[in-house]
Length: 379
Ligand code: PLP
Image (cartoon, rainbow, N blue to C red):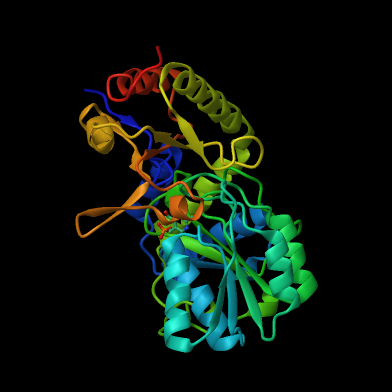
């Protein structure tokens, strides 16, 4: 059975060009970037070349890009250090953020006693910007706003330009989790006011276990991991050389080929939606559908039936890897926090299908054909 992979928002297959470059380097380039001899200097130049590539894509300065092991680490580092060292005592966020943001914010509330405001979101997951404006106007302390760019479960894209403007106008820091949008949507620090943003290589056909963050020069924070002087003292530990090179190449490829893949993915998504809506009973979509959405994500709610709970399992045994719109903890499936926040929780079954440049129209057809044997069809 040839399997179909529709879980690219979770992680994406590595681009062959990235893999080739990384494996070539692994074979020959083993110098430690911190060593001052010949081998070390070549590795250092590869790390710095990668930093330059990422900075150029984002319109940032080279000194504003820092490498990490993941976006989870980057988000933890930014939020915790903003409280510890930038005097932030109030965080405004949204209920649909990734758990690495929400759990860091909860930790900071419980352990450091910071004030936390959670914005209301509409049924599509768009945060209430009037509420944000009024919270910023009435703030009594140093404030950080943490709102993601593109939502990983339902694909809604936030109006980060306006959010950035509000933050700038009120002197608040703006942290934006750009993990799902990088390589899909243009992100430039000269066009939107950001204090911090972050990325994760495996979401844009790069390797797993490497990420980065952008930190505006005005907000330099002290180290979070102590040790050597790597990453200009910000994040000690021998650099993940191959991962860093792979990440920069993968981001460059994604950005250079963005227009072509966007067109392909929009075609797949629209064909997928039209077949689902026309051929299956009671289909609903989650997240923005008309304008600001991530075109690789389609979150679909299926009607509650006897077999609905088995939908993920049945897709898997039919050769289709997708993701459930629920969180599984201790064997008990709970509604996802994103669906709960958007008022979409309940007995319906939600599946997130997330596509990549490697998927085809024929695969979309096969998935719909198989779904027709698992959930009610339209008469
Ligand atoms: N933020 C968002 C929006 C994500 O989708 C993810 C991964 O799913 C993360 C952060 C965490 O990324 P990483 O896998 O690099 O820890």
